[in-house]
Length: 314
Image (cartoon, rainbow, N blue to C red):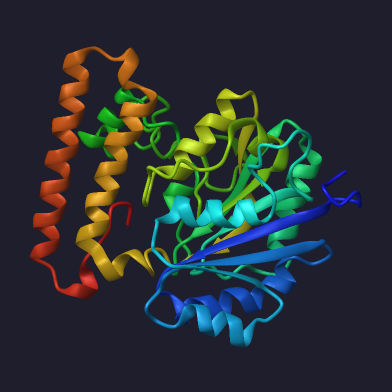
């Protein structure tokens, strides 16, 4: 039973927006069909967008809860505002939320009919699963490889960095970073799914806590999934559901800053999860490699026209 003493609702949807008003409308318009048959409440957290997104939601979607933050605290910060509003992450004894599950959804996704309902059904049918995510697709229909990943241990990251993962994409040893050795249409247990569309079991969130707000952008979804797995839950890639995603709609508006945040998150992730058990030379090497990678990415972007610039994971 939830806090109100009534039957718990199925799903709390949290959408963190920054400066993507042009995508937010289609996303919110698609939600009712995507949530068919579920008892749901939706929160849009606007991270102090300068494009009028908050007023747009307030005027056009009065049935949606709006949290208008006075500052852009980052993606983890914004999601946590929404999750706390839905009752997750409280410190009081007993179930803290009136919702069984939470969905994290990017505003530049367009959820197809019944998509989120089918992800809820995946969690209903698999009690050991603490998080699941769909096949996330780029606008051209290709797989966004970030939607099914292994934890970037020093060895896994090394194989990715020096190109062995790309050279041997079918190798279970070298290609673990994006698990490219698995067929794209096969359901699989993975280390992490992507925060662009992620469903979370309420009990798993209560066990591990909310997102780590030290991650401004990038890495917070990897970190949360890894903590969920370490707490004994499974994380599942569920390709029966396809989620279109205009990846980078927000981050491409500030590419240099987002490149720095991407590489800073890589360093923070390693420091948090692996540095204590890695030899000093490995830690030093990883720090140098990350900073060199950041410098190269910034230099590469400086030579490109604005439409061709990319951010960390693009």
